[in-house]
Image (cartoon, rainbow, N blue to C red; front, top):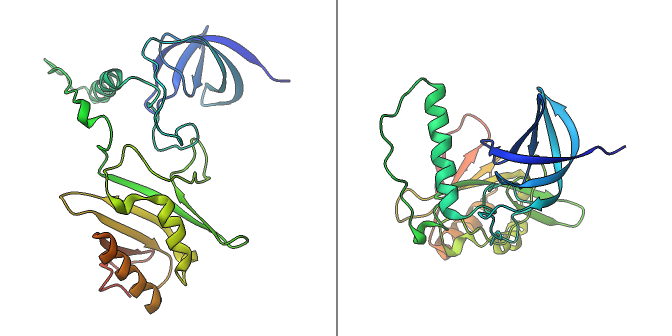
Length: 243
């Protein structure tokens, strides 16, 4: 029998889950904000915390916004897009303050948070996405893990990653099946430490010569640097050096 409760959220955990209390019990609820009254279904208890599924929001926070990303509800890459940007900055500063407090570090004075409208999106310069190949229908999945799951969410674009034509994930789902050893590819890392974008592919086994040549071609076509990270003790290698 399903057990539901009406709860009032008073804080956010480090993973973005809302925190509510009832008596001595603590509840974690995804997709909610402080000040909201919600109806939640209890799923399980771990380490004295009840994990719940959101059923409905009865009282909505004034800081709630509509997430712009079409993948947000399933993708586990972000956890605060339903919170207004100025409030996101405040919440993130509070997280830093809590971590410093846990380390017994006292901050005498906090500067005001830096809020820039042009940095609300496309600010993330590093990410790791999963790659999974379905042998049955020859379909490739490229994306982040689903929230609280090992499954991948296929994404077309990501509004928080830096902008670059090489980060069209729908196009990568069409390219990757052309590789002879697609089953060897497990992850793709995005790195931009300077003006140059770097893509690092994690592979389980040695690349075939045809795949190395194909990746070199994509590197030139998309104007990015491609590296291979073997799943063994061999070091990271540029695609023109990989074997």
